[in-house]
Amino acid sequence: MALIRLNTRSAPANAFAPTSVGKLLNIEHASVTARESPTITANVYADTSLTLNITPTSTTSKILVIGNFVHGNTGGNHPTYMRVTRTLSGTQTAITDKLQHFGYAHNGENNTGSANCTVLDDPQTTSQLTYTAQISRVTNGTAHFNGNYYQTGFESFLTAMEIAG
Picture 1 (cartoon, helix red, strand yellow):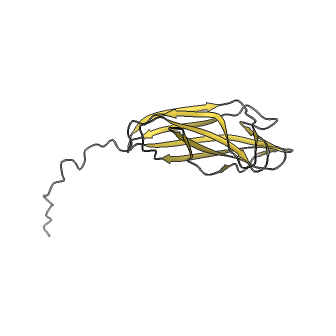
Picture 2 (cartoon, rainbow, N blue to C red; picture 1 turned 180 degrees about the vertical axis):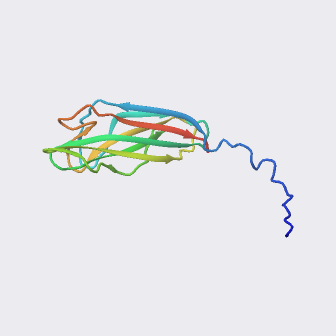
Picture 3 (tube, rainbow, N blue to C red; picture 1 turned 90 degrees about the vertical axis):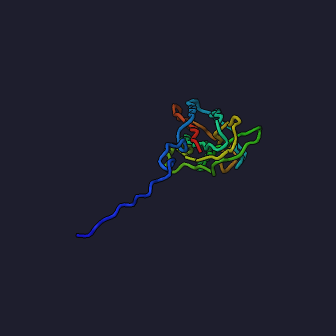
């Protein structure tokens, strides 16, 4: 029978020490149910009332942003789309690309759909951040946030979670 020798070296004292990296430090949530119907210039974004503020506790923290947005249009099959921005010290920066809905309820010339996002933002600050949902459309006209011309009663939301880095 073969002899088996075990490694007698030990792991460093901190090898299995608990870490705070990845822990949830802070969470903020906002939702809106009121329909908003701004007049949009083609491909120009307009802020919606869906915003939330979060203040990271460390410059190494990441912010996980999750959102779901109901949106539609009036005036034919001209898509609307959403995006999310971060405002830090007065500077607004898009943190998502164009979020467009696929598969929508079509009511004559009005349509409604839902788009969502999950983004891990790395703001590297301890200053207050403001996240805002914005809406636009491909042609000039009315865009609808939380519905279309005929439909209301939807809910859109943003959630921001500070994750220790």
